[in-house]
Image (cartoon, rainbow, N blue to C red; front, side, top):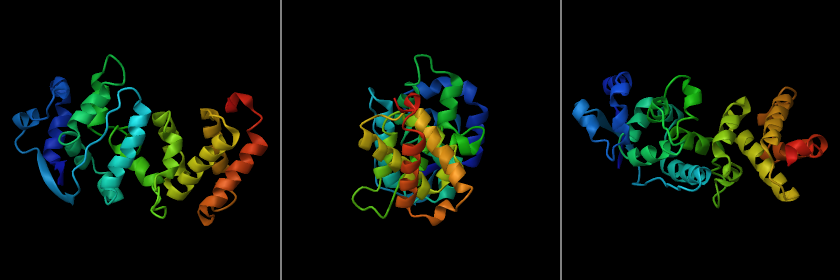
Length: 252
């Protein structure tokens, strides 16, 4: 199938008139957009297999974890420029991913606000931040940062640490400059996965934050990208055992 994007003029129209169309975002179909604007969507030249995203009512983090794999596997040929284009994601949110997003925004809380709906069907404000806040775009960008094409058996192995508390961990990950480097992002996540297994514990958010603080310090003294992924993992683990493990408030 050809991915659809929203035309520039149509995008401007629907953003400017969102408050008047807010209630339409709870309808079962996005067909109403054709009543409001003539030919709002257009087929792109990007052809992908037909696929759909999962909905898991009982576990939002697990749903996001699974959907990173589904979305990125099918859209991994997108360039970074294409994946940062609001027209593409708004086109997809108003077409093939309509039902997924409609159900997803309802999971926030019982009272879904107008702003909450708007920021997930469009990309508002700080674009870089919104790409990892928007329910749809963050699936792709997480996939881009942790996917390892050299691992044919399981290229998403680093995703395991995000299987719980997905949203919070993703925000912390992308707030760190070193997370822009997939090798370093994977190393941080894998080190935490291995530490949890080695110590039979579930590491709390404090440890996660400390690891990225350490990477910032380490990056000030050596070029992290010059290290192999396994070397970065080993340095993080050594730092954990020397400086963090005994702090029970962070560990348990």
